[in-house]
Image 1 (spheres, rainbow, N blue to C red):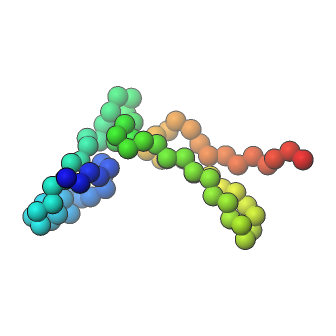
Image 2 (image 1 turned 180 degrees about the horizontal axis):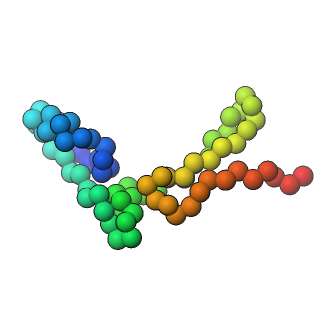
Length: 76
């Protein structure tokens, strides 16, 4: 049994995978508070350090409007 996040595959892909014998478990698209499938898969926050330019950037999971990524300069 394979699991995938909601919205990962369109219906044609799901049907094609099932026709090849794959068994899929796909969670629903809604949860309490409108959080989407993150109630199953979690919520991603990330920081990227570009070592070539020595810059930081951040990202917040767009499925959940619970926060935002912000890079603040350090204090000397």
